[in-house]
Image 1 (cartoon, rainbow, N blue to C red):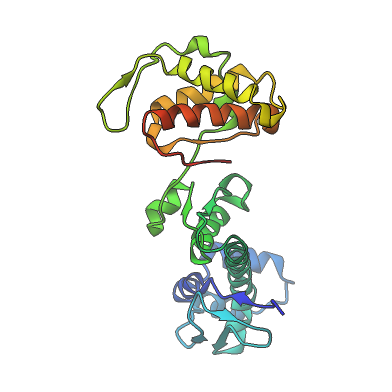
Image 2: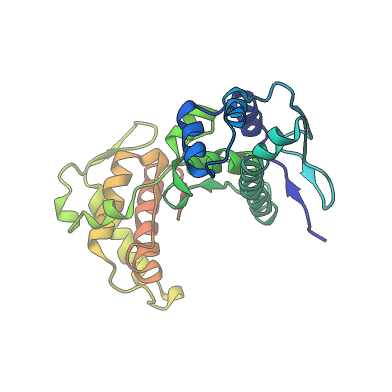
Length: 270
């Protein structure tokens, strides 16, 4: 009935267990937080505690599991495994949640679609952001915009420009270098901006579209053109800075069609 989880977080749990210990500063804080009747022997126990007697039993990370199936079992001294319980649950629940959501997106999108993870700004802190990039990749995504995650885990990097980049332009008149070589290097378009405008005009007055586009935001168009001039082989644009239908999509299409005239293959828009 669609109830499944993709298990993840095992690597982080193993790292936690392998390196688990309390520092003197942490033990001192615990001492101050407990009643004055706390025995010194308990504090000495905390100073020496480790996980050398803990055994871990788990299914393989990335495995699909169903309700009632144990993901992870820890065996060891009761006090130690109780201290591990909360951080282990935190590591497994977050990792498995992100991985499972990514897998569900992949099921909906199918195998033919490219899925990019762009969640760094909205993640639960820098550690959560790094983890989410990793677990989205485990769950079936193809690439990430998180360069740090790409370096750490070998995840392919894909990205686009920002909304701030779009809003930093005023008009296409700001574009000074307007020439662009064709993809095979055999020719050069001396005024790519004019080529884009000619395509935009055709789109705006196309009878089959019923004139739904009208006048587009020229600062957005300038940003798209500038990005295309810099990265003609990887033109990927954000179309929702101003108005998606009336401006973003037609501006994107005009630039994409102009690139196509020069032999470049269209990527996508977001």
